[in-house]
Length: 235
Image 1 (cartoon, rainbow, N blue to C red):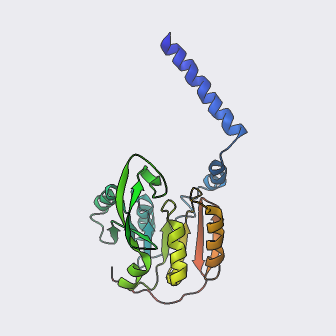
Image 2 (cartoon, helix red, strand yellow; image 1 turned 120 degrees about the vertical axis):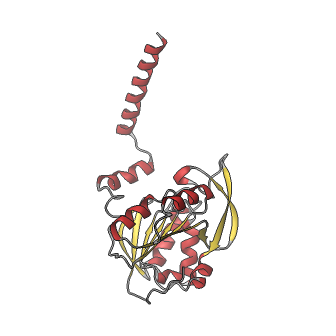
Image 3 (cartoon, helix red, strand yellow; image 1 turned 30 degrees about the horizontal axis):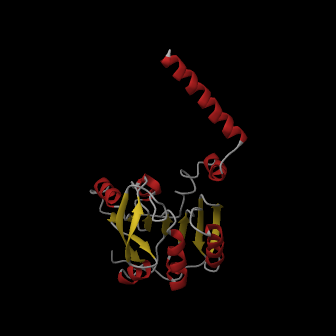
């Protein structure tokens, strides 16, 4: 009797969930509908003018799947930045036999510091509270660029769960933004004044980059309007 009752309850709950989706979608659910319709993760996020000599930065590597997809398509040089030790270790193991993929166990930000991050798989963030908290290392992006003599990066993917605002504002202020040919960005709306800061960043980006495609608070891509140097790497 209890098993039958549980099955009936499950059926009713599933029907209610389906009904809810027909009647109401949460804001983020509405945003991703059109993205999923075009299979953006398999198309827009992977389609670039890259080759085996291109250099790609993956900021927020998590398990390394996007980097794996990019490498499979272009066989290019990829530098993954993942501040969470557990994820960095997994990525390092995953690509241990690939000499063209390098993993850094720190993130890039507007200043060098250690901070607390709340772990939640692919949405771990310094802007969220949680039970599973870890101390991570962040490096000032300008210092990293100068130390490595970076002049041009062909593609930078930025999915750092709220940290994108401080980072991109820093890149713009310091002029490092001109070294980035393509910026694939995921803005997040849980940061205070997120929409206002996003709009300000986009206005500043439009001075050096051209918006190629955009799905607000999902993914968008900005491309450098003109080359401003040649690559010079010392990773």
